[in-house]
Each structure stands twice: as C-alpha cells, then as structure tokens.
Length: 566
Image 1 (cartoon, rainbow, N blue to C red):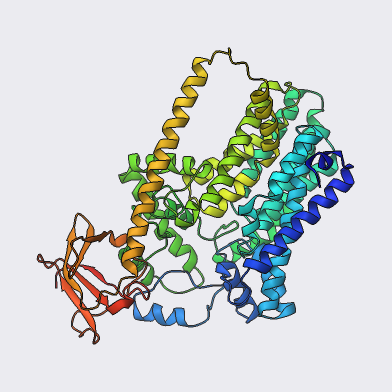
Image 2 (tube, helix red, strand yellow):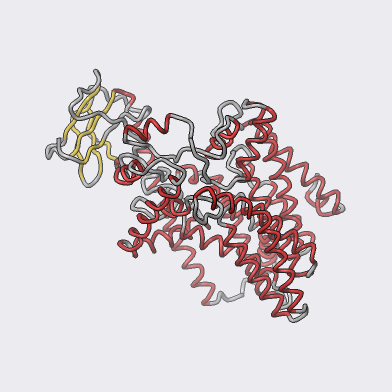
C-alpha cells in the first residue's frame, strides 16, 4: 500500500489496519524470537508460581545469603506473604498458569496477550496525538509507535511492560479529555485507569496526585467551569483511584503492621541507583546489573542475614537499604549529583554502561523518537493558544517521571516506557522538521540561540560517543579474556590500581579488567584445599587471592577475590 493511501483511508479503516498490522508484527516477533520453553519470568513469575503452589503472594528476597540459617531458609518455599512488587501483573501470570498450566502454552499465550496490549497502545497513541494535532500528524505518530522496535521486543518479556505502557497511555488520554471536556465520565475513567496503573507501577501513586493537582489548577485558572464542579470532579477521580488501590494498601498495612502503600521496598530501588557502584545507567560502572553481590556488598549481606526471618523481614531489609542510601547521599553529595545528571541524560539519549542498551538499532529508535518529540513539544509550546494548555499536563507527566527516574534508578524498560509515550509529539515534530527543511532559505541567518544550542548538543553527543566507545572497548576486552583457556598458562598476575592484570605464557600483552566485571563467586574457606585442577595465585603483598578454575573461569564464574590477608 502506498504511503499516500494510508492518509486517504477513512478513520475507522485506518484504525483497524493499524491495530491488525501492529498485532501481526508483534505476534510474528513472538513466534520468531519469543522463548516459551524456559523463559525468564523474573520476580513476577516467581510470585505467580508461589501463588500457584499455595504459598500466596510471596518470594524470597533476591540476595545471596551467607549465613547457614538464612541459606537453608532460602532453599525452602517462603513462609510469609509480602509486597515485593505491584500485584496486577503477577496475578495475570498466575491466572494463565492456573488455567493453562505451568507450561510452554501459558508462556506463549502470555506473550500473545502482551502483543494485543502493545497493539492497543499503538491505537491509543493515535488518539492521544489527535488531542493535540491534525489527522496526518496523528497517523504519523501512530505509525512510529507501530514500528517502535523496543516496544515490539518488550512483548516477549514478562515484567508487564506492554501492560503499563497501555495503561499509562489511557491515563494520559482521559486526564487530557477531563481537562478539555469537563465531562464526569472522563474524570471517572481517569481515576479508574490511574488505579490500575498504580497496581502495575507503584511510583504512579505519586505522579497521579501531581497530575490531578495540575489539571485542577489549570481548569480553575480558565474560569470557564465552576470551582465547585471542578473540585467535585477531581475528588471523584481521587475516590475512584482509592477504591481500586485501597484494598491492596490495607492488605499491606495489616500484613506488615505499619502503613505500606504498593510495595515493601522503595528504599531498595533507591539504593540500586544511589550506591558506590552506581553509574547513572541501568548497570554499574562495570556493566553489571546492580544487585547485592557477595564480593561487592558483603557488609550489607551480613546485616540482612542477622535479621529475624518473620512477617516483617521485607520491611526490615528495606530499612537497611534506607540507611545505606542516606549515608551515601550524606557522604557523597557531589557524586550523587553527578549520578543524577548522568541518569537524566542517559534516560533521554543512550545508556553507555549497559551492554544491551548499546545496540545501535535500539539507540536509533530511542534518539529518533526523542529528537522528533522535542521538536513537536517546542512547536506546541510556541504555537498553541493559551486556552489549550493540555500539553502542559502531558509535560507534567513526562517531567515528573524523568525526575523520579533521575533520583531513583534507571532500567532499560523504564526508558522504553517513557520514550514510547513521546510518540504523540514525534509525529508533530517530523512534520515541522520536514517543513523547515523544505522551506529553508539559504540566506537565513542562524541566531545566537541556535548556535549555542548546537554547541551544547555537539558537546553532549561527543561525550556520549566517547563514553560509548570506552565502555564497549572495556566490555569486549573482558569478554575476549573470558573465553580464553588459561589453565596452566598464567605467567604473572597482579592487582594494580584496582584492576586485575593477567599475563599468559608466550604472550607479550597483559589482559586487564576490573573485578567489578565479575558477576558472582564461589567461596572456598582459606583452610580447605582447592579442587584438583584449580590454580591459586597470590599477589606479592598478600592482600588479594585469586582463584581460577581451568577454562571455566568465567563461564561458571569460578573466581574469588578476598580483600584480606591470608
């Protein structure tokens, strides 16, 4: 079908083709790339399976216990229910496992459900764009969403990405319609879908109140709707949200015997983005997911191990991370600020510290969407009359989320979530950019403001490119060494400037990497003899012991780093 015909279609026909095209594309990706044999169901699936086996909404805290009693506890099913993650997505997974069984069919059908939700989201992008612009720009926006590869890949995961993308889009649609139409039905639906979104994204409970306040303020400022009706309708939205989320909040509060909203561990999420190994990206500065590891955070693990295992365990663990975060902020204010600034930049551009986010195709889709949306926002702010301030509500949502991610933590799926919601303005941006290129006058002078903007953008791109190349080089060097069979081939090994340096026999060059790249460890007591075939190497100052096990050094992660004297 020619592109011109897409814009000539009747609205209903276009929406049907849009939805079916999105669905076919996503299901095709599920069939080609989806893993329905042994998929990673993450925490959502762990809880769903525990529910299926009669252990309730529960899971063991994901940390490697070191003490004997806690190690044994983790080997057993959890005794106590918790609130480790929001409940809606785990309950959906549980429902599928209950009906179809814990098998490949259930996993495939869950990915099909994700495909349907993601396809509906594409349609919602069209309707969102229609609130701000004309038919042509709206269709372009929806087509960008249709082919947005990060969202397509997301349908093969089980963390609820497609679900909360759709719910967020619907929430934005109804909050904007509430502002524009002052219709009681829109206010009710805004509250209803906000409640559902809160049960998939716990942080939205905060953002809902921000959106509600801004919307109410803008309506009152217009002075076209009575104050009484405005406050009544806003209170109705709040009431509907509370009806949806209150049962879960009451359940958690009674469970832990203290007021608890949607999840039990908000400080753990803050800690993941605010600790000595935080980079500003989704991974640490050594390109690992930030989780509690024995060789990186042994003191935290010891504190957790000492806690009594009871109904309050999750809350008690989170209090440990609260102390860690506050201590980090207090002792490292400048590093904290640096991490936050980098995280804000990485969220809107590229995350050089995370290997999966350095995929060039992924980067293209992110930068293309952000660049075009920025132009769209700029045009909207400059050209829309004051009476139509609905874009302000959209900006409020976007900025609130960006600030929240900046302070708390960045995950690649959060970046996809936020960028995918920019597409209603990407269509506007592409049209305006095309107009500027087409109507360009060669004699037009470039303003000082434009020159300054170009300099800032150029410097930012230079910094990101340098960091990208540096981290890619480090990662490839480490991966190359990872594959080498080093058994009996080590000539020298050193620990210098916080890096491990290894020289193999008949090799002139040293292989060098930071121990932070090591994902895990296997502990051997100092007094126990290492297994046959293992090679022990000790640095001259006896401060560090390195253990390499044949050619399985990294494949099976057989490496120990002890920062203590033998």
